[in-house]
Image 1 (cartoon, rainbow, N blue to C red):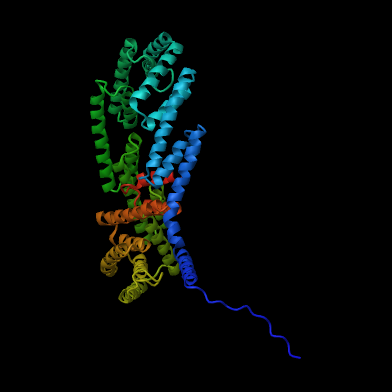
Image 2: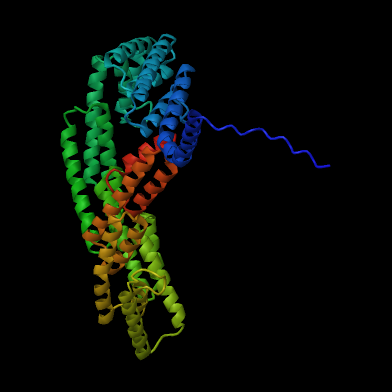
Length: 498
């Protein structure tokens, strides 16, 4: 008996509309798979920005207007704005925070919570609340404070402090007390006249400090006076004398740097930075001093004076720890130590000259192969460096360096055009070792740092915060004084919630 044939369901042909639907579905799935990462890359920054705005709105509703840890409404709206500067929602949110801060200041003033009211009013002003509205709350706050402060007692204490020459620096100083009175009653004649006389005494102290050569003290006293009354009659004269003294100090520091008096130049530039921490010229001067220390360290290492080289390198590191000159000098010192270790004993002059000629021949062969920087140890640059370690003043060594220098310059320009920034940096390091520090190398370093900042800007706008941070670190290491660096660092910190 034969087995029964199993039943099979008849396969019905698909209708045309069903076939089209299946094809469309498969095509849609393929598109999703193919484009899911680019779409995510484009949408992530918007999602991140929206999440920050949602958190900010919640913080505002809960009354957390500002917080040092970045969880306040202000900080969250600013973080969203840093990621997407063109988004109107974030600016509207900040305006609402300002309104809430001003309303809180009004309530706190009525409740006589004066310190809190001042803090809230400051927050509102920092977010550009309308000036007229802020002044209404400020007048109310002054009136409430004046009723509790004891104006007459403050004036008497201020007069006593002035007679004792305690003009500024603490809560019981004359100018501090006069300022408290004027904050409460801006037209109080006794306070205005007392402040005028106390400021004249303070500026007289500034002139004495200038005569004694104490720029830091003179600048501090002038700044204090300016904070109390920028329109004081004696202030322009003191500022003019201070500006002349600062320029003379800068000229002297530059002269010391040119003469190789690096310790004295460092002291002068550091004084200028104490006078004005934002003095870009003084900061560049210290970077140049660091570069000079690094160059000195490399020269001393080439002569196998390693103790002196290490000391010079320590000076450079203290002044500019992220400089390209420092890294290049460190590598040159390491190569010199290796060369010294290979020699073990002092070579006879003839043997040294033979090794130098052999190294130069190997460098020329590597150059002919196109091996300018690679492979490590066998590149033209490494062979030349070994020859320089043996005989830095040899004319043949100098001529070989002069032949390699145009190639290092071309290497830098080529890699920079191709946006191969890591490779461009290696070419720049080789160029600096061959050419030394100068205007051309400084300009090349600035261009490379600017390119890293541009990369960082692209990454920040794409929401890639770690990548933007890495680009910032690269730019700072190459040229810490490049324009726009600190502004970008501040925006990145805000976007990161720091």
